[in-house]
Amino acid sequence: MEKRSKLLRAMTKDGSARAFVIDSREIVNDAIKYHGTTPTASALLGRTLTAASIMGSLLKDKGNSLTINIRGDGPAGSVIAVSDYAGNVKGYIKNPIVDIPKKTNGKLDVSGAIGHGTLSVTKDIGLKEPYSGTIDLVSGEIAEDITQYFATSEQTPTLCALGVLVDRDYSCLAAGGVLVSLLPMADEDTISKLEKNAPRLANVSRLFADGLTPKQVMDIALDGIEYDVFDELDVGYVCDCSRERCARALFSLGKKEVEGILAECRDDGKPEEIDMECHFCDKKYKFTAKEALALFDGVTGKDEEKK
Image 1 (spheres, rainbow, N blue to C red):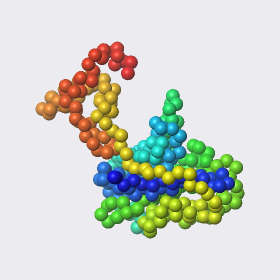
Image 2 (tube, one colour):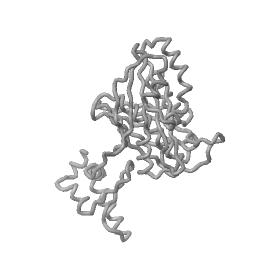
Image 3 (cartoon, rainbow, N blue to C red):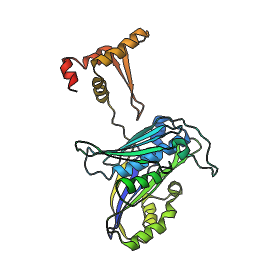
Image 4 (cartoon, one colour):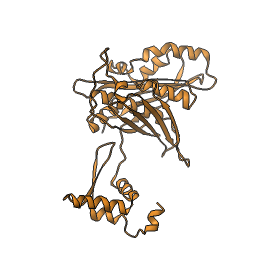
Protein backbone atom coordinates (compact mmCIF):
# COMPACT_ATOMS: atom_id res chain seq x y z
CA MET A 1 0.00 0.00 0.00
CA GLU A 2 1.35 3.44 -0.94
CA LYS A 3 2.41 5.77 1.85
CA ARG A 4 0.03 8.63 2.56
CA SER A 5 0.37 12.00 4.24
CA LYS A 6 -1.67 12.92 7.33
CA LEU A 7 -3.92 15.97 7.59
CA LEU A 8 -5.57 16.94 10.90
CA ARG A 9 -8.51 19.33 11.12
CA ALA A 10 -9.48 20.92 14.43
CA MET A 11 -11.70 23.58 15.98
CA THR A 12 -11.13 25.52 19.19
CA LYS A 13 -13.76 24.69 21.80
CA ASP A 14 -14.82 28.34 22.02
CA GLY A 15 -15.44 28.49 18.26
CA SER A 16 -12.82 31.20 17.72
CA ALA A 17 -10.66 29.42 15.16
CA ARG A 18 -10.24 26.35 13.02
CA ALA A 19 -6.81 24.82 12.55
CA PHE A 20 -5.20 22.45 10.07
CA VAL A 21 -1.89 20.61 10.29
CA ILE A 22 -0.42 18.38 7.59
CA ASP A 23 2.68 16.22 7.43
CA SER A 24 3.13 16.36 3.65
CA ARG A 25 6.43 14.53 3.25
CA GLU A 26 4.95 11.70 1.17
CA ILE A 27 3.13 14.14 -1.12
CA VAL A 28 6.33 16.06 -1.76
CA ASN A 29 8.39 12.92 -2.34
CA ASP A 30 5.87 11.75 -4.94
CA ALA A 31 6.06 15.15 -6.65
CA ILE A 32 9.87 14.93 -6.71
CA LYS A 33 9.64 11.43 -8.19
CA TYR A 34 7.26 12.50 -10.96
CA HIS A 35 8.97 15.76 -11.91
CA GLY A 36 12.66 15.21 -11.10
CA THR A 37 12.89 18.53 -9.32
CA THR A 38 16.00 20.26 -8.03
CA PRO A 39 15.98 21.20 -4.31
CA THR A 40 14.71 24.75 -4.87
CA ALA A 41 11.99 23.56 -7.24
CA SER A 42 11.05 20.83 -4.74
CA ALA A 43 10.66 23.41 -1.98
CA LEU A 44 8.57 25.72 -4.16
CA LEU A 45 6.31 23.01 -5.56
CA GLY A 46 6.15 21.22 -2.19
CA ARG A 47 5.01 24.30 -0.28
CA THR A 48 2.34 25.00 -2.90
CA LEU A 49 1.06 21.40 -2.83
CA THR A 50 0.99 21.49 0.97
CA ALA A 51 -1.10 24.67 0.98
CA ALA A 52 -3.42 23.28 -1.70
CA SER A 53 -4.06 20.10 0.30
CA ILE A 54 -5.11 22.07 3.37
CA MET A 55 -7.24 24.53 1.42
CA GLY A 56 -8.83 21.79 -0.67
CA SER A 57 -9.95 20.02 2.49
CA LEU A 58 -12.10 23.10 3.21
CA LEU A 59 -14.28 22.29 0.20
CA LYS A 60 -17.65 20.81 1.04
CA ASP A 61 -18.66 18.34 -1.66
CA LYS A 62 -17.22 15.50 -3.70
CA GLY A 63 -16.45 16.81 -7.16
CA ASN A 64 -15.32 20.21 -5.84
CA SER A 65 -11.75 21.24 -6.59
CA LEU A 66 -9.32 24.03 -5.74
CA THR A 67 -6.42 25.27 -7.85
CA ILE A 68 -3.51 27.45 -6.75
CA ASN A 69 -1.75 29.09 -9.69
CA ILE A 70 1.44 31.05 -9.02
CA ARG A 71 2.91 33.00 -11.93
CA GLY A 72 6.22 34.75 -11.52
CA ASP A 73 8.96 36.38 -13.56
CA GLY A 74 11.68 34.27 -11.92
CA PRO A 75 13.45 31.24 -13.42
CA ALA A 76 10.89 28.76 -12.00
CA GLY A 77 8.16 30.24 -14.20
CA SER A 78 4.76 29.12 -12.95
CA VAL A 79 3.56 26.61 -10.37
CA ILE A 80 0.15 24.94 -10.26
CA ALA A 81 -1.34 22.75 -7.53
CA VAL A 82 -4.81 21.19 -7.68
CA SER A 83 -6.66 19.65 -4.74
CA ASP A 84 -9.90 17.73 -4.44
CA TYR A 85 -12.32 18.11 -1.52
CA ALA A 86 -10.53 15.34 0.40
CA GLY A 87 -7.11 17.05 0.28
CA ASN A 88 -5.56 14.86 -2.43
CA VAL A 89 -3.33 16.91 -4.69
CA LYS A 90 -1.40 17.01 -7.94
CA GLY A 91 0.79 19.74 -9.38
CA TYR A 92 3.64 20.80 -11.59
CA ILE A 93 6.28 23.48 -11.97
CA LYS A 94 7.18 24.94 -15.34
CA ASN A 95 10.93 24.70 -14.75
CA PRO A 96 11.56 21.67 -12.49
CA ILE A 97 15.33 22.01 -12.73
CA VAL A 98 15.61 25.64 -11.62
CA ASP A 99 18.99 26.08 -9.97
CA ILE A 100 19.86 29.30 -8.18
CA PRO A 101 22.25 30.03 -5.28
CA LYS A 102 21.02 29.62 -1.72
CA LYS A 103 20.32 32.65 0.44
CA THR A 104 23.05 34.05 2.65
CA ASN A 105 21.48 32.20 5.61
CA GLY A 106 21.93 28.90 3.76
CA LYS A 107 18.24 28.38 2.99
CA LEU A 108 16.81 27.59 -0.44
CA ASP A 109 15.83 30.75 -2.30
CA VAL A 110 12.20 29.97 -3.06
CA SER A 111 11.22 33.62 -3.49
CA GLY A 112 14.11 34.17 -5.90
CA ALA A 113 12.97 31.19 -7.96
CA ILE A 114 9.43 32.49 -8.43
CA GLY A 115 10.26 36.20 -8.58
CA HIS A 116 7.57 38.88 -8.70
CA GLY A 117 4.12 37.88 -9.84
CA THR A 118 0.66 36.80 -8.75
CA LEU A 119 -1.08 34.06 -6.81
CA SER A 120 -4.54 32.97 -7.90
CA VAL A 121 -6.91 30.60 -6.14
CA THR A 122 -9.77 29.10 -8.14
CA LYS A 123 -12.56 27.10 -6.52
CA ASP A 124 -14.81 24.95 -8.68
CA ILE A 125 -17.77 24.18 -6.42
CA GLY A 126 -20.30 23.22 -9.06
CA LEU A 127 -21.64 26.69 -9.81
CA LYS A 128 -22.01 28.16 -13.28
CA GLU A 129 -18.63 29.88 -13.01
CA PRO A 130 -15.74 28.96 -10.69
CA TYR A 131 -14.85 31.45 -7.96
CA SER A 132 -11.41 33.01 -8.42
CA GLY A 133 -9.32 35.45 -6.40
CA THR A 134 -5.91 36.89 -7.32
CA ILE A 135 -3.32 38.81 -5.33
CA ASP A 136 0.14 40.15 -6.05
CA LEU A 137 2.84 38.04 -4.41
CA VAL A 138 3.88 39.52 -1.08
CA SER A 139 7.15 37.65 -0.60
CA GLY A 140 7.17 34.64 -2.93
CA GLU A 141 7.81 32.41 0.10
CA ILE A 142 4.25 31.03 -0.40
CA ALA A 143 3.11 30.96 3.26
CA GLU A 144 3.01 34.76 3.51
CA ASP A 145 1.27 34.90 0.15
CA ILE A 146 -1.41 32.43 1.27
CA THR A 147 -1.92 34.53 4.41
CA GLN A 148 -2.37 37.62 2.25
CA TYR A 149 -4.80 35.79 -0.04
CA PHE A 150 -7.08 34.91 2.89
CA ALA A 151 -6.91 38.47 4.22
CA THR A 152 -7.62 40.10 0.85
CA SER A 153 -9.89 37.70 -1.01
CA GLU A 154 -11.74 36.01 1.85
CA GLN A 155 -11.43 38.68 4.56
CA THR A 156 -10.27 36.02 7.00
CA PRO A 157 -7.33 36.67 9.37
CA THR A 158 -5.12 33.62 8.93
CA LEU A 159 -1.80 32.23 10.08
CA CYS A 160 0.00 30.03 7.55
CA ALA A 161 3.30 28.20 7.94
CA LEU A 162 4.76 25.98 5.21
CA GLY A 163 8.08 24.20 4.92
CA VAL A 164 10.04 21.62 2.94
CA LEU A 165 13.41 20.16 3.94
CA VAL A 166 15.31 18.55 1.07
CA ASP A 167 17.85 15.83 1.88
CA ARG A 168 21.30 15.46 0.32
CA ASP A 169 19.99 12.86 -2.13
CA TYR A 170 17.33 15.40 -3.29
CA SER A 171 14.50 13.46 -1.60
CA CYS A 172 12.18 15.17 0.86
CA LEU A 173 13.44 14.78 4.42
CA ALA A 174 10.43 16.52 5.95
CA ALA A 175 7.55 18.73 4.84
CA GLY A 176 4.44 20.13 6.39
CA GLY A 177 2.12 23.01 6.94
CA VAL A 178 -0.11 24.73 9.47
CA LEU A 179 -3.09 26.95 8.76
CA VAL A 180 -5.13 28.65 11.48
CA SER A 181 -8.10 30.81 10.48
CA LEU A 182 -10.06 33.05 12.83
CA LEU A 183 -13.82 32.74 12.78
CA PRO A 184 -16.27 35.64 13.24
CA MET A 185 -16.47 37.00 16.82
CA ALA A 186 -13.20 35.30 17.80
CA ASP A 187 -12.32 35.64 21.49
CA GLU A 188 -9.57 38.20 22.17
CA ASP A 189 -7.81 35.91 24.64
CA THR A 190 -7.68 33.12 22.04
CA ILE A 191 -6.32 35.54 19.44
CA SER A 192 -3.61 36.65 21.88
CA LYS A 193 -2.55 33.04 22.53
CA LEU A 194 -2.45 32.25 18.79
CA GLU A 195 -0.21 35.26 18.20
CA LYS A 196 2.07 34.13 21.03
CA ASN A 197 2.34 30.61 19.55
CA ALA A 198 2.98 31.73 15.97
CA PRO A 199 6.80 32.18 16.18
CA ARG A 200 7.20 28.54 17.27
CA LEU A 201 5.76 27.46 13.89
CA ALA A 202 8.19 29.49 11.78
CA ASN A 203 10.22 26.39 10.88
CA VAL A 204 7.42 23.84 10.64
CA SER A 205 9.37 21.38 8.49
CA ARG A 206 12.04 21.18 11.19
CA LEU A 207 9.36 20.21 13.72
CA PHE A 208 8.43 17.24 11.54
CA ALA A 209 12.10 16.42 10.88
CA ASP A 210 12.56 16.24 14.66
CA GLY A 211 9.91 13.53 14.78
CA LEU A 212 6.83 15.45 15.87
CA THR A 213 3.43 14.15 14.76
CA PRO A 214 0.68 16.35 13.26
CA LYS A 215 -1.12 16.17 16.65
CA GLN A 216 1.99 17.41 18.46
CA VAL A 217 2.39 20.27 15.99
CA MET A 218 -1.30 21.09 16.50
CA ASP A 219 -0.59 21.24 20.24
CA ILE A 220 2.07 23.88 19.55
CA ALA A 221 -0.19 25.93 17.27
CA LEU A 222 -3.03 25.85 19.81
CA ASP A 223 -0.95 25.84 22.99
CA GLY A 224 -3.06 27.08 25.92
CA ILE A 225 -6.29 26.74 23.91
CA GLU A 226 -8.78 23.91 24.28
CA TYR A 227 -9.65 22.28 20.98
CA ASP A 228 -11.19 19.23 19.35
CA VAL A 229 -9.78 17.32 16.38
CA PHE A 230 -12.82 16.67 14.21
CA ASP A 231 -11.13 14.92 11.31
CA GLU A 232 -7.96 13.04 10.36
CA LEU A 233 -7.48 12.54 6.64
CA ASP A 234 -5.09 10.33 4.69
CA VAL A 235 -4.07 12.48 1.75
CA GLY A 236 -1.69 11.92 -1.13
CA TYR A 237 -0.40 12.93 -4.53
CA VAL A 238 -3.14 11.62 -6.81
CA CYS A 239 -3.28 12.17 -10.57
CA ASP A 240 -6.58 11.31 -12.22
CA CYS A 241 -5.38 11.51 -15.81
CA SER A 242 -6.63 8.86 -18.25
CA ARG A 243 -6.68 8.00 -21.92
CA GLU A 244 -10.33 9.05 -22.01
CA ARG A 245 -9.46 12.53 -20.72
CA CYS A 246 -6.74 12.88 -23.33
CA ALA A 247 -9.21 11.81 -26.00
CA ARG A 248 -11.62 14.53 -24.88
CA ALA A 249 -8.81 17.07 -25.02
CA LEU A 250 -7.97 15.99 -28.57
CA PHE A 251 -11.61 16.19 -29.56
CA SER A 252 -11.82 19.73 -28.17
CA LEU A 253 -9.14 20.82 -30.66
CA GLY A 254 -11.45 20.00 -33.56
CA LYS A 255 -10.93 17.70 -36.51
CA LYS A 256 -9.19 20.33 -38.65
CA GLU A 257 -6.55 21.00 -36.00
CA VAL A 258 -5.94 17.28 -35.42
CA GLU A 259 -5.58 16.68 -39.16
CA GLY A 260 -3.07 19.54 -39.25
CA ILE A 261 -0.97 17.98 -36.49
CA LEU A 262 -0.93 14.63 -38.30
CA ALA A 263 0.00 16.36 -41.58
CA GLU A 264 2.98 18.02 -39.89
CA CYS A 265 4.16 14.61 -38.69
CA ARG A 266 3.89 13.27 -42.23
CA ASP A 267 5.73 16.26 -43.71
CA ASP A 268 8.54 15.84 -41.17
CA GLY A 269 8.89 12.16 -42.03
CA LYS A 270 7.65 11.10 -38.61
CA PRO A 271 4.99 8.49 -37.79
CA GLU A 272 1.48 9.89 -38.10
CA GLU A 273 0.56 9.79 -34.43
CA ILE A 274 -0.09 12.20 -31.60
CA ASP A 275 1.81 11.90 -28.34
CA MET A 276 0.27 13.48 -25.25
CA GLU A 277 1.87 13.80 -21.84
CA CYS A 278 0.23 14.55 -18.49
CA HIS A 279 1.76 17.65 -16.85
CA PHE A 280 1.01 16.28 -13.40
CA CYS A 281 2.51 12.77 -13.52
CA ASP A 282 4.40 12.70 -16.86
CA LYS A 283 2.40 9.69 -18.04
CA LYS A 284 2.37 9.45 -21.84
CA TYR A 285 -0.54 8.60 -24.13
CA LYS A 286 -0.17 7.78 -27.83
CA PHE A 287 -2.92 8.12 -30.46
CA THR A 288 -2.38 6.76 -33.96
CA ALA A 289 -3.85 8.70 -36.87
CA LYS A 290 -6.67 6.17 -37.08
CA GLU A 291 -7.43 6.46 -33.35
CA ALA A 292 -7.29 10.26 -33.37
CA LEU A 293 -9.55 10.68 -36.41
CA ALA A 294 -11.97 8.04 -35.12
CA LEU A 295 -12.88 10.48 -32.34
CA PHE A 296 -14.73 12.52 -34.95
CA ASP A 297 -16.66 9.66 -36.53
CA GLY A 298 -20.26 10.72 -36.98
CA VAL A 299 -19.50 14.33 -36.02
CA THR A 300 -20.58 16.99 -38.53
CA GLY A 301 -19.07 20.42 -38.92
CA LYS A 302 -22.10 21.91 -37.15
CA ASP A 303 -21.61 19.52 -34.24
CA GLU A 304 -18.03 20.73 -33.85
CA GLU A 305 -19.19 24.35 -33.83
CA LYS A 306 -21.44 23.55 -30.87
CA LYS A 307 -18.58 22.14 -28.75
